[in-house]
Image 1 (tube, rainbow, N blue to C red):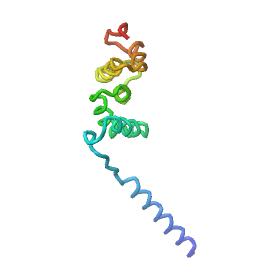
Image 2 (cartoon, rainbow, N blue to C red; image 1 turned 90 degrees about the horizontal axis):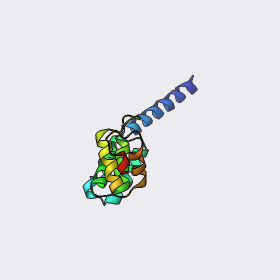
Image 3 (cartoon, rainbow, N blue to C red; image 1 turned 30 degrees about the horizontal axis):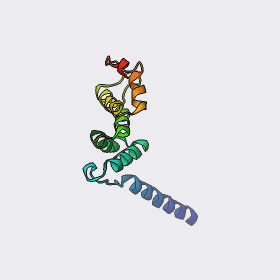
Image 4 (cartoon, rainbow, N blue to C red; image 1 turned 90 degrees about the vertical axis):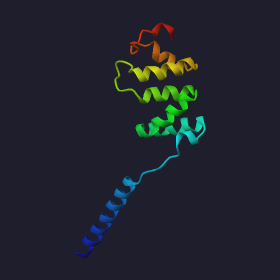
Length: 121
């Protein structure tokens, strides 16, 4: 009987530990306090970890400062429809393409681009 109580206590401690781990919020610095490359790296890492809403401000900041990879990553993080590009997704894909990103040019030349500028890329 005592063995069961010890097991139960350990299980309870483990559950509490896991619950506290999931409740812990990691705070990240403001995008404007980082270099453009660091903001891109952090934003890309967060998006890769499926923390899309947390990563988007960093990617947007880096994209607005002229980072082509960040512009494409931000564009892709905005994707909500696999069939067509959304307006903001298109805007940042165009920005990445104009900065010389070949993957963005390919994205804009596909049938998903319904904005009439497919031939430009």
